[in-house]
Image (cartoon, rainbow, N blue to C red; front, side):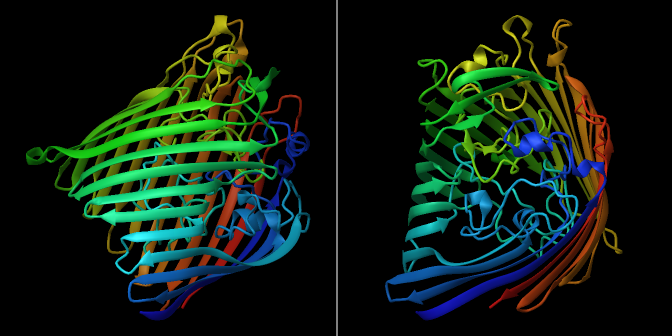
Length: 590
């Protein structure tokens, strides 16, 4: 009972320099003007965040002011923030900005624009904001809670809804490939990010009774200025503990506002342009409506043998107005069956997946189009260009089916994680099938109907950790291989390349509250996607974290070197560039 307050504040400083012809890629002017052909550089391939020269400073604070009554608790969360200097560095290389400042949430407070500066001072800006971020009313026992404002969900099944992932890079002293199998990064035990996903803005009610928990949400999703996206969602979870959990969830989302251009052809006025990277489709969309329902069960298959199972079933319905072919909308389904066996330190798991091409296809653009840069062959990509999907597509994308096998050995002085994933296209993506309302293939470009083939993706994952007395050594490797055959008359359909990614890290706890880490990484693409691909990024990093009673400090240094061949044949320009970044963050907890 009574009044209490908790404040978290931080100050982040970023100083980044870059050099080389890759700072000014030939695609940059068209990309800035809104054309969909995206450059490959200057971007960090591990995160897709832009690498631009400049100095930025961000300071933010959030305070939770709570008052306890005999039967109820009430609370307000208030935030204040100030950002100055390079807007790109402030938006992408510091902690997730507060919503009133965040361009990825549609805020126009900072003068953000797509920029490819060659020296510091070309993308400067500043802004300050103070706002009430959220409010809470709850019963004293916590069984009934009403929240309003910017919020995160208490429960969700990610094949029905996954909050939009961050497009910025949280400060850290170690890095990993996007599809890493690692249990945690060096230093994450004493330095956790303030946010792992973008928040929703709306009202949320949670209720608990025994093993049952119920949540209802009505909230706005991140969207571009002039557009809006909103979801209404309900979920019920019966958690019996010890691995037995049943859940049901349903979501309805709608978009409104001005039309927007996108790289799918099922919207109004579809166009197919032959580019150096294949047949690129575009159209305009508006008035989207989508409903997703899902059931999930986690259960014991054989307790005596240590075998557990999971079953997930999802179905979605989608439409938009207008579309290229009215009346072609159809439900899409999602299926997942999995089993794992735990024996001592080892876990063996097998999962089978199917995500149909019209499952959860709503196109949701947000922030600015630099959010998710991608040439046609960029991998891994969450979704299409600067859009996100309502569901988690990190294991497999739309229009894919296949299986995944994993073998983990955890604990002890030596740990190892292994994975093999094999995914196939379900339906060929052609200039005809891709105009069906809601038909999406999140990766390949369309083919002509008489030249249609099926693509395949394989993923190999390896993570190993050794914990000798002098520190911790980890090796993190992911290799994606992608292949789609083509006929000789259509060489633009060729897809055959691999994306090897590797990071080696050494870290050591100098004391329980001081962690040092250093390492090397490499991210490469080699093969062909209609045109030859051969480039790579080399990364060196080092950093230290110091945790105090009320303050914590992080210092991180990154050095990047990018080299390869141009992927824009009409230009002789080189994509090569180098860059260095120093990131300093000071935290305060009161």
